[in-house]
Length: 282
Ligand SMILES: Nc1nc2c(c(=O)[nH]1)N[C@@H](CN(C=O)c1ccc(C(=O)N[C@@H](CCC(=O)O)C(=O)O)cc1)CN2
Image (cartoon, rainbow, N blue to C red; front, side):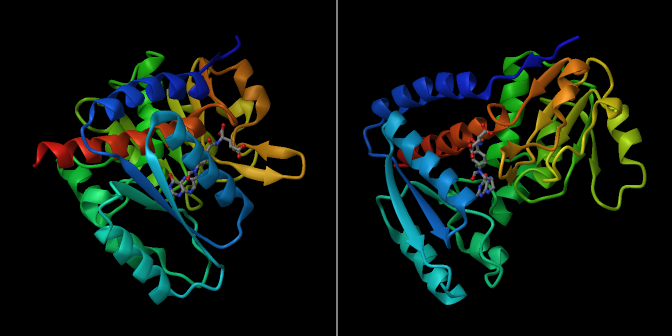
Protein backbone atom coordinates (compact mmCIF):
# COMPACT_ATOMS: atom_id res chain seq x y z
CA UNK A 1 0.00 0.00 0.00
CA UNK A 2 1.19 3.56 -0.70
CA UNK A 3 -0.53 6.39 1.10
CA UNK A 4 -2.66 8.98 -0.70
CA UNK A 5 -0.83 12.28 -0.24
CA UNK A 6 -2.84 15.07 1.37
CA UNK A 7 -1.60 17.88 -0.83
CA UNK A 8 -1.46 21.05 1.24
CA UNK A 9 -0.01 23.17 -1.57
CA UNK A 10 -2.89 22.40 -3.96
CA UNK A 11 -5.49 22.83 -1.23
CA UNK A 12 -3.94 26.15 -0.13
CA UNK A 13 -4.00 27.42 -3.72
CA UNK A 14 -7.70 26.56 -4.03
CA UNK A 15 -8.42 28.36 -0.74
CA UNK A 16 -6.44 31.40 -1.94
CA UNK A 17 -8.69 31.68 -5.01
CA UNK A 18 -11.76 31.74 -2.77
CA UNK A 19 -10.17 34.28 -0.40
CA UNK A 20 -9.14 36.52 -3.29
CA UNK A 21 -12.78 36.78 -4.39
CA UNK A 22 -13.94 37.47 -0.81
CA UNK A 23 -11.32 40.22 -0.34
CA UNK A 24 -12.31 41.81 -3.67
CA UNK A 25 -15.97 41.78 -2.60
CA UNK A 26 -15.30 43.67 0.64
CA UNK A 27 -15.81 47.42 0.48
CA UNK A 28 -13.08 47.91 3.10
CA UNK A 29 -9.34 47.15 2.75
CA UNK A 30 -8.03 44.07 4.58
CA UNK A 31 -4.67 44.24 6.39
CA UNK A 32 -2.56 41.55 8.08
CA UNK A 33 0.42 42.48 10.25
CA UNK A 34 3.21 40.25 11.53
CA UNK A 35 5.46 40.81 14.52
CA UNK A 36 8.83 39.07 14.30
CA UNK A 37 11.43 39.31 17.06
CA UNK A 38 15.00 38.17 16.48
CA UNK A 39 16.96 36.29 13.84
CA UNK A 40 15.60 32.75 13.81
CA UNK A 41 15.91 31.66 10.14
CA UNK A 42 12.81 29.43 10.29
CA UNK A 43 10.65 32.24 11.69
CA UNK A 44 11.98 34.65 9.05
CA UNK A 45 11.07 32.17 6.33
CA UNK A 46 7.51 31.64 7.70
CA UNK A 47 6.91 35.38 8.00
CA UNK A 48 8.16 35.94 4.45
CA UNK A 49 5.73 33.24 3.29
CA UNK A 50 2.84 34.97 5.07
CA UNK A 51 3.57 38.28 3.30
CA UNK A 52 3.91 36.54 -0.08
CA UNK A 53 0.54 34.89 0.52
CA UNK A 54 -1.09 38.25 1.38
CA UNK A 55 0.13 39.64 -1.94
CA UNK A 56 -1.47 36.73 -3.83
CA UNK A 57 -4.84 37.24 -2.14
CA UNK A 58 -4.95 41.05 -2.21
CA UNK A 59 -4.43 41.61 1.51
CA UNK A 60 -2.26 44.55 2.54
CA UNK A 61 0.57 43.25 4.70
CA UNK A 62 2.42 45.15 7.37
CA UNK A 63 5.69 44.05 9.01
CA UNK A 64 7.05 44.84 12.44
CA UNK A 65 10.53 43.26 12.58
CA UNK A 66 12.24 43.79 15.92
CA UNK A 67 15.80 43.08 17.09
CA UNK A 68 16.65 40.06 19.28
CA UNK A 69 17.32 42.41 22.25
CA UNK A 70 13.74 43.78 22.26
CA UNK A 71 12.37 44.02 25.81
CA UNK A 72 8.96 42.81 26.99
CA UNK A 73 7.86 46.46 27.38
CA UNK A 74 8.97 47.37 23.84
CA UNK A 75 7.11 44.40 22.43
CA UNK A 76 4.00 45.33 24.42
CA UNK A 77 4.17 48.83 22.93
CA UNK A 78 4.15 47.33 19.41
CA UNK A 79 1.10 45.22 20.34
CA UNK A 80 -0.70 48.33 21.62
CA UNK A 81 0.11 50.16 18.38
CA UNK A 82 -1.25 47.32 16.22
CA UNK A 83 -4.41 47.07 18.37
CA UNK A 84 -5.04 50.77 17.70
CA UNK A 85 -3.99 50.77 14.03
CA UNK A 86 -7.11 50.94 11.78
CA UNK A 87 -5.14 49.52 8.82
CA UNK A 88 -4.62 46.26 10.72
CA UNK A 89 -7.57 43.85 10.45
CA UNK A 90 -5.64 41.02 12.12
CA UNK A 91 -2.08 40.25 13.17
CA UNK A 92 0.19 37.56 14.57
CA UNK A 93 3.24 37.42 16.79
CA UNK A 94 5.59 34.86 15.24
CA UNK A 95 6.45 32.08 17.71
CA UNK A 96 8.67 31.06 19.34
CA UNK A 97 9.78 34.37 20.86
CA UNK A 98 13.40 34.71 22.07
CA UNK A 99 13.85 33.04 25.47
CA UNK A 100 14.00 36.29 27.49
CA UNK A 101 10.45 37.22 26.39
CA UNK A 102 7.24 35.82 27.91
CA UNK A 103 4.78 34.88 25.15
CA UNK A 104 1.77 34.46 27.49
CA UNK A 105 1.21 38.14 28.40
CA UNK A 106 1.98 39.14 24.81
CA UNK A 107 -0.68 36.84 23.32
CA UNK A 108 -3.11 38.01 26.01
CA UNK A 109 -2.51 41.67 25.07
CA UNK A 110 -3.63 41.14 21.44
CA UNK A 111 -7.12 42.50 20.75
CA UNK A 112 -9.11 39.21 20.47
CA UNK A 113 -10.96 40.63 17.43
CA UNK A 114 -7.58 41.05 15.65
CA UNK A 115 -6.17 37.65 16.65
CA UNK A 116 -5.00 36.11 13.35
CA UNK A 117 -3.71 32.94 15.03
CA UNK A 118 -6.72 32.20 17.25
CA UNK A 119 -4.34 31.80 20.21
CA UNK A 120 -5.72 34.56 22.49
CA UNK A 121 -7.05 33.06 25.75
CA UNK A 122 -10.51 34.53 25.04
CA UNK A 123 -10.62 32.89 21.60
CA UNK A 124 -9.35 29.55 22.93
CA UNK A 125 -12.05 29.84 25.63
CA UNK A 126 -14.67 30.48 22.96
CA UNK A 127 -13.48 27.36 21.14
CA UNK A 128 -14.04 25.35 24.33
CA UNK A 129 -17.54 26.86 24.66
CA UNK A 130 -18.46 26.44 20.97
CA UNK A 131 -18.74 30.20 20.34
CA UNK A 132 -17.65 31.48 16.91
CA UNK A 133 -14.15 33.03 17.05
CA UNK A 134 -10.84 32.94 15.14
CA UNK A 135 -9.55 29.34 15.22
CA UNK A 136 -5.92 28.23 15.72
CA UNK A 137 -4.49 28.20 12.19
CA UNK A 138 -2.60 24.88 11.99
CA UNK A 139 -5.34 22.79 13.68
CA UNK A 140 -7.96 24.43 11.46
CA UNK A 141 -5.79 23.66 8.43
CA UNK A 142 -5.42 20.02 9.45
CA UNK A 143 -9.19 19.58 9.84
CA UNK A 144 -9.79 21.27 6.47
CA UNK A 145 -7.23 19.00 4.79
CA UNK A 146 -8.77 15.84 6.30
CA UNK A 147 -12.24 16.97 5.20
CA UNK A 148 -11.21 17.81 1.63
CA UNK A 149 -9.71 14.33 1.22
CA UNK A 150 -12.76 12.65 2.80
CA UNK A 151 -10.78 11.09 5.64
CA UNK A 152 -13.48 9.74 8.00
CA UNK A 153 -13.54 11.78 11.23
CA UNK A 154 -16.75 10.78 13.02
CA UNK A 155 -15.90 8.13 15.60
CA UNK A 156 -12.23 8.04 14.52
CA UNK A 157 -9.58 7.43 17.17
CA UNK A 158 -7.07 10.26 16.84
CA UNK A 159 -3.67 10.19 18.57
CA UNK A 160 -1.97 13.58 18.82
CA UNK A 161 1.74 13.58 19.67
CA UNK A 162 3.03 16.83 21.23
CA UNK A 163 1.31 19.30 23.56
CA UNK A 164 2.49 22.63 22.08
CA UNK A 165 0.14 25.62 22.09
CA UNK A 166 -0.03 26.06 18.29
CA UNK A 167 -1.05 22.45 17.44
CA UNK A 168 -1.14 19.73 20.10
CA UNK A 169 -3.26 21.42 22.74
CA UNK A 170 -5.92 23.03 20.51
CA UNK A 171 -6.33 20.30 17.84
CA UNK A 172 -8.29 18.09 20.24
CA UNK A 173 -10.75 20.94 20.85
CA UNK A 174 -11.52 21.11 17.11
CA UNK A 175 -11.67 17.37 16.48
CA UNK A 176 -14.00 16.68 19.41
CA UNK A 177 -16.61 19.23 18.31
CA UNK A 178 -19.93 17.65 17.34
CA UNK A 179 -19.25 18.53 13.71
CA UNK A 180 -16.08 16.37 13.73
CA UNK A 181 -17.01 13.86 16.47
CA UNK A 182 -13.58 12.21 16.79
CA UNK A 183 -12.11 10.71 19.98
CA UNK A 184 -8.74 12.27 20.78
CA UNK A 185 -5.78 11.09 22.87
CA UNK A 186 -3.02 13.64 23.55
CA UNK A 187 0.45 12.11 24.00
CA UNK A 188 3.55 13.85 25.34
CA UNK A 189 6.93 13.09 26.91
CA UNK A 190 5.16 11.61 29.96
CA UNK A 191 3.17 9.09 27.90
CA UNK A 192 4.03 5.55 29.05
CA UNK A 193 3.68 3.64 25.77
CA UNK A 194 3.69 6.02 22.79
CA UNK A 195 3.94 3.19 20.23
CA UNK A 196 0.77 1.55 21.60
CA UNK A 197 -1.16 4.86 21.54
CA UNK A 198 -0.09 5.53 17.94
CA UNK A 199 -0.74 1.95 16.82
CA UNK A 200 -4.43 2.06 17.78
CA UNK A 201 -5.07 5.38 16.01
CA UNK A 202 -7.11 5.83 12.83
CA UNK A 203 -5.53 9.28 12.54
CA UNK A 204 -2.08 10.25 13.87
CA UNK A 205 -1.12 13.92 14.23
CA UNK A 206 2.60 14.21 14.95
CA UNK A 207 3.76 17.60 16.23
CA UNK A 208 6.49 16.79 18.74
CA UNK A 209 9.38 18.29 16.76
CA UNK A 210 11.36 15.05 17.13
CA UNK A 211 12.70 13.92 13.76
CA UNK A 212 11.59 10.45 12.66
CA UNK A 213 9.74 9.75 15.97
CA UNK A 214 6.83 7.97 14.26
CA UNK A 215 8.12 4.83 12.59
CA UNK A 216 6.45 2.42 10.16
CA UNK A 217 5.94 -0.31 12.79
CA UNK A 218 3.97 2.13 14.99
CA UNK A 219 1.31 2.95 12.37
CA UNK A 220 -1.90 0.95 11.87
CA UNK A 221 -2.19 -0.01 8.18
CA UNK A 222 -4.56 2.39 6.41
CA UNK A 223 -4.34 5.14 9.07
CA UNK A 224 -4.15 8.83 8.14
CA UNK A 225 -0.86 10.40 9.28
CA UNK A 226 -0.38 14.15 9.54
CA UNK A 227 3.18 15.38 10.03
CA UNK A 228 3.54 18.81 11.65
CA UNK A 229 6.84 18.39 13.50
CA UNK A 230 9.42 20.31 11.50
CA UNK A 231 13.13 19.89 12.31
CA UNK A 232 15.67 21.87 10.24
CA UNK A 233 18.84 19.90 9.49
CA UNK A 234 21.84 20.55 7.22
CA UNK A 235 20.22 18.17 4.74
CA UNK A 236 16.91 20.10 4.79
CA UNK A 237 13.56 19.79 6.55
CA UNK A 238 12.80 16.56 8.43
CA UNK A 239 9.41 15.69 9.89
CA UNK A 240 8.35 13.66 12.94
CA UNK A 241 7.19 10.91 10.58
CA UNK A 242 9.77 8.51 9.10
CA UNK A 243 9.68 8.41 5.26
CA UNK A 244 8.70 4.71 5.04
CA UNK A 245 5.45 5.33 6.95
CA UNK A 246 3.93 6.09 3.55
CA UNK A 247 4.21 2.34 2.79
CA UNK A 248 1.59 1.50 5.46
CA UNK A 249 -0.49 4.66 5.90
CA UNK A 250 -3.74 5.17 3.99
CA UNK A 251 -3.23 8.95 3.80
CA UNK A 252 -0.17 11.06 4.54
CA UNK A 253 0.24 14.82 4.96
CA UNK A 254 4.03 15.07 4.60
CA UNK A 255 6.66 17.67 5.37
CA UNK A 256 7.01 19.61 3.20
CA UNK A 257 3.73 20.11 1.32
CA UNK A 258 1.09 18.90 3.79
CA UNK A 259 -0.17 20.76 6.87
CA UNK A 260 2.41 23.61 6.64
CA UNK A 261 0.90 25.44 3.66
CA UNK A 262 -2.56 25.03 5.26
CA UNK A 263 -1.37 27.06 8.28
CA UNK A 264 -0.87 30.10 6.06
CA UNK A 265 -4.17 29.52 4.23
CA UNK A 266 -6.03 29.46 7.56
CA UNK A 267 -4.24 32.56 8.87
CA UNK A 268 -5.50 34.41 5.82
CA UNK A 269 -8.97 32.86 6.27
CA UNK A 270 -9.05 34.13 9.88
CA UNK A 271 -8.01 37.58 8.60
CA UNK A 272 -10.71 37.74 5.91
CA UNK A 273 -13.33 36.50 8.39
CA UNK A 274 -12.24 39.24 10.85
CA UNK A 275 -12.73 41.83 8.10
CA UNK A 276 -16.14 40.36 7.18
CA UNK A 277 -17.21 40.39 10.84
CA UNK A 278 -16.00 43.99 11.32
CA UNK A 279 -17.81 45.09 8.15
CA UNK A 280 -21.05 43.31 9.14
CA UNK A 281 -20.94 45.09 12.53
CA UNK A 282 -21.06 48.63 11.01
N1 LIG B 1 2.39 32.83 15.52
C1 LIG B 1 2.61 31.59 15.05
N2 LIG B 1 3.82 31.06 15.17
C2 LIG B 1 4.04 29.81 14.69
C3 LIG B 1 3.00 29.09 14.03
C4 LIG B 1 1.73 29.69 13.95
O1 LIG B 1 0.75 29.11 13.42
N3 LIG B 1 1.59 30.95 14.45
N4 LIG B 1 3.27 27.87 13.44
C5 LIG B 1 4.65 27.47 13.23
C6 LIG B 1 5.32 28.09 12.04
N5 LIG B 1 4.46 28.41 10.90
C7 LIG B 1 3.72 29.53 10.92
O2 LIG B 1 3.99 30.48 11.59
C8 LIG B 1 4.54 27.67 9.69
C9 LIG B 1 5.16 26.43 9.63
C10 LIG B 1 5.30 25.77 8.41
C11 LIG B 1 4.83 26.33 7.26
C12 LIG B 1 5.04 25.72 5.93
O3 LIG B 1 4.43 26.11 4.97
N6 LIG B 1 5.94 24.76 5.84
C13 LIG B 1 6.32 24.23 4.56
C14 LIG B 1 7.84 24.17 4.51
C15 LIG B 1 8.42 25.55 4.59
C16 LIG B 1 9.93 25.59 4.53
O4 LIG B 1 10.48 25.20 3.52
O5 LIG B 1 10.52 26.02 5.52
C17 LIG B 1 5.74 22.85 4.38
O6 LIG B 1 5.54 22.16 5.38
O7 LIG B 1 5.50 22.51 3.23
C18 LIG B 1 4.20 27.56 7.31
C19 LIG B 1 4.05 28.21 8.51
C20 LIG B 1 5.47 27.88 14.44
N7 LIG B 1 5.26 29.24 14.79
